[in-house]
Image: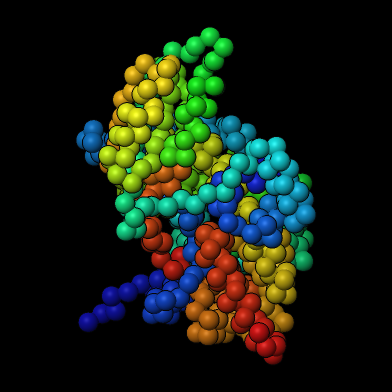
Length: 391
Length: 160
């Protein structure tokens, strides 16, 4: 028999998260700080709209780009929150999660040999999606000393004449890093000078802490026509299982993305789309409350790290911390595996998000205070043991 | 800071001050002082425990009583309310808008005991015109907390 597989897919390594997931799943009583999703249920009024749409028998396909009402609400929301405007009829596509948007954006924009700059540590999908789209992924290794922000120097260092897309994964999973307006202005200048396009994944845009809210790079002068903005409902509205995201961008790109979406997906789930209209219209207070609650737990975790002597820069977005374990002389993988075995606490090795995540762990605070307390107690005990102190 | 403290302790009054201070990013002393002040100012009026009595062997009957009254000269609603809320078996008294004047929530050991309170104590009060007693059959949610089932974290242990 012939080899049934494509060489391209076989050479892509499976997600590092998956590998660790398999180990964790065998440990039944482990407590986890390893999830990448909110601990809240979807607010009831949103769920209610989904249920109502089912009761009404709204069980058919929608337009390929998504319900027009939803696209109009996305337009309103983006304008209200981030001061960017997209035409609901030509510049917005509703997708199956932000992940699909990443995939079809890469496929719509890349030709063989085109390079995609991927700041890392970052979400697991950018590199494989770029490769599957025929592009070449070039990691940019971000560092704790820059608070895991993308600096102009780091960007310039990796630029080549083949560079076409810059991925901007901020607020960042797994580091919790954010880019402020002044940081973005510097990046935008380089993007314009070198005629690049930006894939801005702003799925955590609602979840920033401190005085300044998230700024979309698309709102900066000259950036709108160069940016595909990706966002979704999973994180801000606690709707991961509904699988709903969207892409906004210039018509010339979105038109081609819609073609792929049309053939591969048809349309995003109808029930989710109806629920999402309500999410965008009526959730300001829910989002505020969830955000405040994450912020409290963020402080709690950082304080606990400080007490146990785990070095961690202050993350100002998403719901992750990214403490360094370099001083223990172990790899992230070893640390995470031993922590799991010895204390039954699951965290994700930083290397799951790129090689430069070595020496770090992703610890999520999307857990109840009770759960965090227990897990941090165990982590502290583990750290003390490594330091040779008795507890 | 007050509102944030209240939002947390309304849901969890047993949280220790140290944790609360960390959550809010304030100093322990500042939080402790603020709480002490709010206690003095009668903003924080008590710290209660939410008990689902149905899960105990303790029998308890809860009734909600609608009370219509005529306030008398020199004795407004407040005075009347006081005559009702002084009874230790009375759990809550609210002045209402609408078809009746007071909601009285009463706890007793048996229905008979509750009925007796209404007929012996409440109804005979001079200003009370009428009462309507409703017994609570089941509490689903109380003080913002769903009582029936413990929620499990159904998320997978590790996700990207």
